[in-house]
Amino acid sequence: MDQETLGSIVLLVIVTLISVVQNAFFANKVEHESRHCNGKVLQRQGSSSFDRVYTANQNCGHAYPTFLAVLWCAGLLCSQAPAAFAGLMYLFVRQKYFVGYLGERTQSTPGYLFGKRIILFLFLMSVAGILNYYLIFFFGSDFEIHIKTITSAISPLLLIP
Image (cartoon, rainbow, N blue to C red):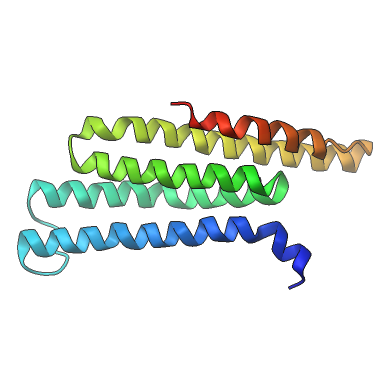
């Protein structure tokens, strides 16, 4: 793979690998709580604390394919740096959701809502990239610089709760 191609995806690869480590952390928490509550490995029936850890892990796992799809689509079709930044923010929010779910379930709500906003941002970046492709294809107009400027300017706004 040449350096230019690698340079255009390296941030997305880093965010993806961090998300894999986070998934391993979540799975480890489930295993630890299972052993702590039941004395055996991965028995589904257990205490309410095990059920919370297990459910939080399942909820994070269900949203994971959607996150990866929009992360890579936004990074490849639109702009890598804002997509990677939004991906890191999503991982932080997912951690907040997971930890919040272990306490009172209402503590997980802000992380859940913030995560939805980040997924929407990545989705809109992907749509903008697709629209730009078809504008180039049919009309010869390239708005890539404008789209990258807008997404770079908007991505820090994801920090606002």
